[in-house]
Length: 294
Image (cartoon, rainbow, N blue to C red; front, side, top):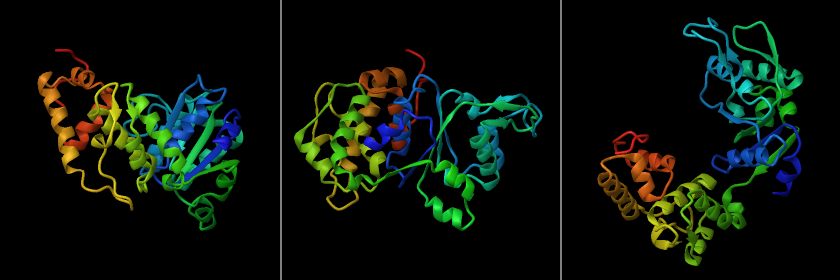
């Protein structure tokens, strides 16, 4: 926390290291929110699984006719983030050819759209994240050494949640507060969360609290009844009964509102986005358009 607060106000590039789900994206947003750029855009790109062409188009944009299918000019994420922060998640997966172009941006703060000849100035803070050992990758030729040193101005390592047990209760309360249903976390529920190893890290904790926010009554306590039975040594135990109860609650609410997602989300007291995620998890058909009423 102290480290993040110290670097947040500055425009320096930050490189976040940590296992999948440790909260790197959340920390990137925190750094942006505590910086002078907080009122400007926060834009993110997950580099994993993207081809060189797609990554370049997403980052730098392209001109009309730059490639087959480029029927109009497209502004890239660098321009979208101008004045704000660009978060590059899983930068270790970025292809070497794109890394070379990103290095030029970091050195000159100028870029060209794909298929363009004009160079554009950009004012953006770049925060990147990875679960890989970039120093090792650079030494073995899988990542540009010059880009690694340019990105690694300020490094923050996020340990797994199992090593940050003091953060568990505060994060759980924060995730509940995000649902805006006035929930409180019972002492017994807190003890259960503190005793779990969290192999899925912060992401797993968020998912569990989102589910609890659906099951617990608005304004009430989140108790053991609203949490999956978490084993003391790693993986959660069977969540079949609790999952069935949650699914039944969602399905009955959808039926009561004729499949209207917006109305069902209001009745459940959760955000539309959270309801969409739970529908996807249980494979429940979406039903009526979320943007219509009745």
